[in-house]
Length: 295
Length: 280
Image 1 (spheres, helix red, strand yellow):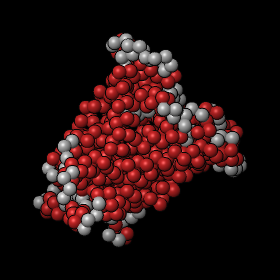
Image 2 (cartoon, helix red, strand yellow):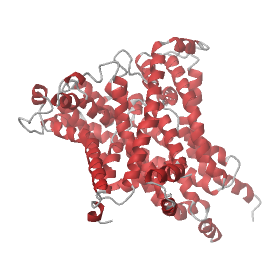
Image 3 (cartoon, rainbow over the protein chains, first blue to last red):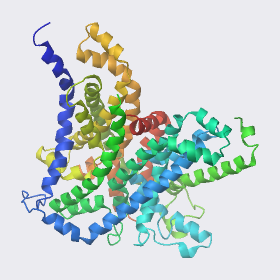
Image 4 (cartoon, chains in turn cyan, purple):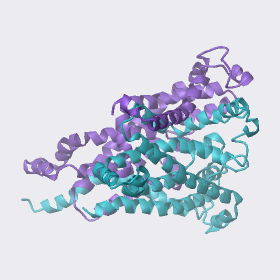
C-alpha cells in the first residue's frame, strides 16, 4: 500500500461532498446568516446597507400590520393542524379497505396537490367572485341570499376564505401520509382487539390511533412549517388586502422588501419568521434523527 | 370483498354514498373551472355561473395562449425546471452517497444541515439570494433561478437519497471494492443503478415542486419573457382583471403538465411524498 493511501481514504467522502456542500453553503446556509446581518441595517436595495442596530425590530413590534400578520399565521396554523389532520385521517381510515373505486376516490382527494398554489388561488378566486361566482350563485339558488357576500373583500371572512383553499389542497397530502402509516399497522393487532370485544371506534381509539402517533407528529410539524411558509395563495388572491386583513408574515415581508424597498425591515420580519419556525424545525429534526441514533 | 357483498350491508352503502358526495364536492373546483373555460365572459357576467351557456367556444384558451403569453410562459417553466431537476438529482446523489456510505467526523452534523435547511422559511433566504444573483450577474436570467432551485432542493434530495442508500446492503458495495472497483465507479456503476426507484419517485416530486414555484420566480426574474407559468399567470390575472374565462383557461392550460404527471407518474409521486415524510 502506498503511504498516502490512508489520507486518501479519509478524503474520499469529502470528494463526493465538496461540490454539493459548497453550493448548499453558498446559496442556502450562508444567506440565512446574512439575513440576520441585513436585519440590523437600513438597506434599501440600492445604496450599501448602513448599520442601525435593533431599530428595525423596535419598529416592527409597534407595527399594526405585524400584529395582524402574526394573528393570521396563527389562524392558519390552528386550521392546518386540525381540519386536514382529522379529515385526512378519516379519509385514510375510510379508504384503507377494499371498497369499490377506492383508487379513483383516493386520486380525487390528492389531485389538488399536484396543482400549483397559483392555479388553486385563481380557480378559487373565481368561485369566490361575489356577483357571478359559483359559491354565491349556489347560495342564491337555494334561497340563502343573505349568506352570499364578497368572500375576499370582507375583512372578517377573507383570511378564512384563503385558508379554506389551503386546507382543500392539504387534506389529500395528510391522507396519503396516514395511508402509508396504516400500511405499517399489523392487521393481527386489529383482529386481536376485535376478538377482545372492542367496537370499531374503540379499536381505532386505543389501537390504531396510538400506532399512528409517529405519523401524527410528523404531519402536525410539517403542517405548522407549511403554514408559516404560506405566501402564494395570499399573493395571488388578495395581496394581503383589504386593509392588510389577510396579510401573513411571508407576504408582509415580501411587500416591505420588494414593493416598499425597505429591505432591512423586511429582513427583520424574515428573522422573526425564522425564529418561530426554528422551534418546529428542531422538533422535526429531532423526530427524524431519532431513528438515526438507533443505527 | 366483492361489490355485491360490500353493498349487502345498508350502513356500508350509506357510508359509501356519503363518501361519493364528499368526493364530488372535492372535485367541484376543477369541474367549475372546466365548465367556465368553454364559455364566454359576457355570457357568464350577464347571466351568472348557474345558467345554460349560450355558446361554447375555445376562444378563451386561444386568448390566454397567444396574447396572455402562455405560449412562452409554459416553455419557460420547462427551461427552468428540467436543468434544476437534473442538476439537483446528480449533485445530491453524490452528497447522499458520502453521507450514507462513509463514517467520518461531521457526518451527522452535515445531515442535520441538509435536513434543517430544507425546512427553512423562504423569506429568510430571499434578500441575500436576491443580492447574490445580482452580484453574480445572474439576476433576471434563467441561470440565477436554476442555481437557486438546484441548491435549495439539495437538502431534501440528499436526505431522501441518503436514507434510501442506507438500505442497500453493504456487502454489495464491499464486493465491488474488493474487486478493485474505484470509489467513483462504485458510486456510478453499483450504487446509482440500485437507487433508480428512489430517483424516479424523487424526480417526479421535485418536478412538481420546482414547476409550481412562484415565489422565487417573482424574486429572481423581472422580464416578462423569462417568467415561468406561475408568475406568468399572476401577470395574466392583472392584465385580464375581470375576464375570468381567460384567467381560468390560462390556469387550466398551466395545469396540463401537472395533470400528465398525475396520470402517468402518480405512483412515483405518492411514493416520493411518503418516503420524504415517514422514512428516516
